[in-house]
Length: 87
Image (cartoon, rainbow, N blue to C red; front, side, top):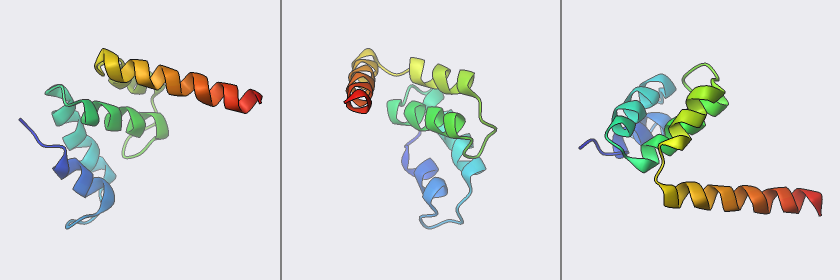
């Protein structure tokens, strides 16, 4: 199983030249092996156009693959953020 460390190294330039496209390549490989952190990171990359063209459908697809427990936590955080904006 692929470790999330390699794509993080490319994303942040730890020990290698920073290369967001290479990071996305390795995030994708880890995400295909059901690594939740890689799925999250890949969704962030697509949602913000980091190393790839911005693609909200791909971002949502990455987030949809996250385990139910993580998706529930994200929904709770979204509700809290929305309530804080309204206050």
